[in-house]
Image (cartoon, rainbow, N blue to C red; front, side, top):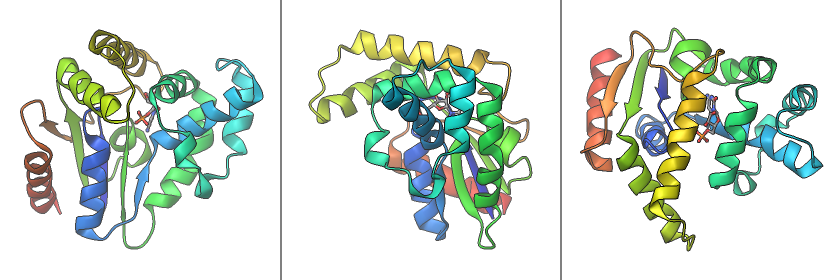
Length: 206
Ligand code: C5P
């Protein structure tokens, strides 16, 4: 069983994907980490994020099974990741590994922006998780505050809008729901309610 979860930044798709993976005993791949790792490599080298040749080289030489998650989290890395993710050959360099992860005999849960549309178009279950930009900004703002980062709410909202525009507006693998994805709007749902709705959908689809 392959479960494909897509959605915009701070929609709750990561939390949902993790919980579904535990619930069904499946391995989980957060594909955003791959683009974050490419961006991290360029920043560590002091290279510009839009240097296509260097970005592709970084994508091709990532040690994909051993990404250091602690260095990839954070607001700035998400923003930087969306810049390199708009470069088509960077995406191309990462497709095979994601598909291989999804082809494990037991199945897998993958979350990202293009799982249901590009990486696993034949996934057993596709869920597109959304929430209003304001609600996503509130969640992100709260999360940052919890980590001691005092970023004004308006700035977090502007960030989210900018990332939405970049992810939805790019030509290759833009952020869009697959035609056969189930939309899950979590604007007015708690984590538990969103999880129950997702499980109900998986059960109906498997
Ligand atoms: O999901 P996360 O916030 O970690 O993703 C960071 C960025 O990586 C996204 O804004 C998006 O531009 C890119 N991404 C992507 N395709 C994926 C996963 C992430 O383009 N499957």
